[in-house]
Image 1 (cartoon, rainbow, N blue to C red):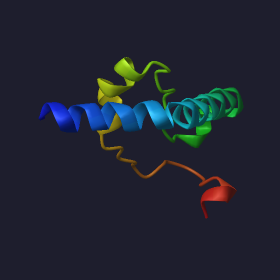
Image 2 (image 1 turned 30 degrees about the vertical axis):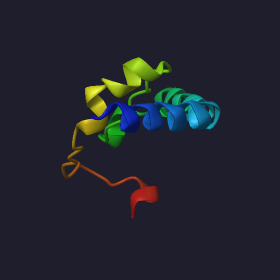
Image 3 (image 1 turned 45 degrees about the vertical axis):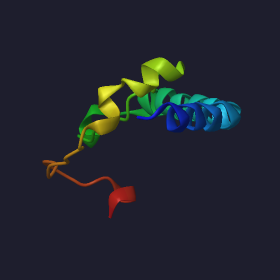
Length: 81
């Protein structure tokens, strides 16, 4: 990236950082709550918490992964039908 574009990108990130960090914290709280409520019989993947540091978030490979679901064996939970 050119220097000017790089500086504009980081200026935009700095401007939106408080809202971004608030959203990440909410998402991580939801991940924790889902983990507490999770039952192994659901056979669905849980989301992973996101890093709270921007440098770690930038290099987090889990953001680039595709999530594939497979048919669960047995009865389907009511909220999925």
